Length: 410
Image 1 (cartoon, rainbow, N blue to C red):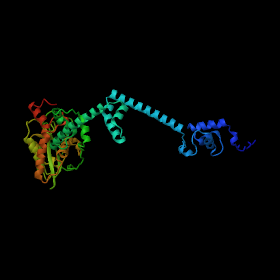
Image 2 (tube, helix red, strand yellow):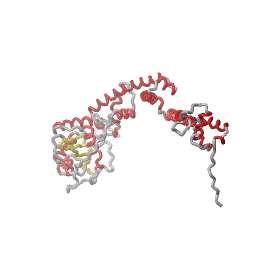
Image 3 (cartoon, rainbow, N blue to C red):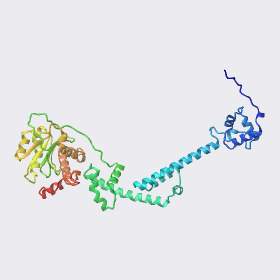
Image 4 (tube, one colour):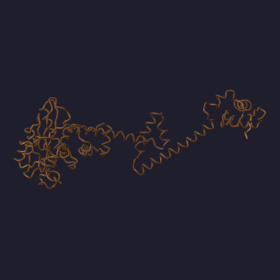
């Protein structure tokens, strides 16, 4: 059975009584509905029927409805007010939650967010929004005196940090690329003498802020040729416990450039104390030049106890010249297993320290470079602390242990 079709009923003004008209007018003038929304809600026909009622029975001037509450927004003033009230309630709830989070963080974790950052925040808001200090402090229940006291403390702190910067730059003139932990260790007593209270982490943050941290330089060029026919010796350091100076020497060769050419620096280092005991700069990597660093190390020895010389499997160390020098001084040779730089890691590390912390500027000639290397090695041995030596210098450990007959520093 088909549904009958009904024609839309047409209504006239007489179909609405005055009470109904006044009720609709009241809702519109209170802002609960727009006149268009009222027409749609009550099924009132005609595009401007309600507007005619408003002009005839309303208490407001509806001759220009677009200027009176009838904005382009679909919301009525009452709806706008309700929405704004809800948004305000949401913001109050959000502020309450954030304030509670800050209080918990300050009380349980000691972050001191309010104490540290409120003054800075107030200053920023004042500059951006033009808000007075009195109004901002009254809004958050904080006295102006506390803000001024905080700013005064910041000024005093910045004056102290300027002194920290001076001390850092003075130390960096001696060791330009010294790491932060070692730098703090060297300057800690200077901070105390100048009444500066600054911890290691705060010191690190300050250097980072002032862009005074050292970025590590990474470069590598192979200087070892191990594929040769000469005799290689086994690695004796795998199971050995180094407990005294002059028990194990390690050797390596690294390149250093001047404006003249590329030079080669041979180093001999005492494993226990990390002291560089022999070095030689030459224009090539011949065994005759490399062995001169060994001769210096032998000449500076303090005792005649058993000694192992460890190196990579380079041609120079396997040569007859070098091995004869070892035998002559009763030094036992030891070498890495194949081409594995990690088995000669200490020697590689000493190379890196010299090149990346001291030899950072290119010299004009070999004479200047030789002088720079001598000064750098003296500074490394006598002034640079080592983490592996409990922040002692190589020279201190070497001499102290020698005086204690090699038993007092393990």
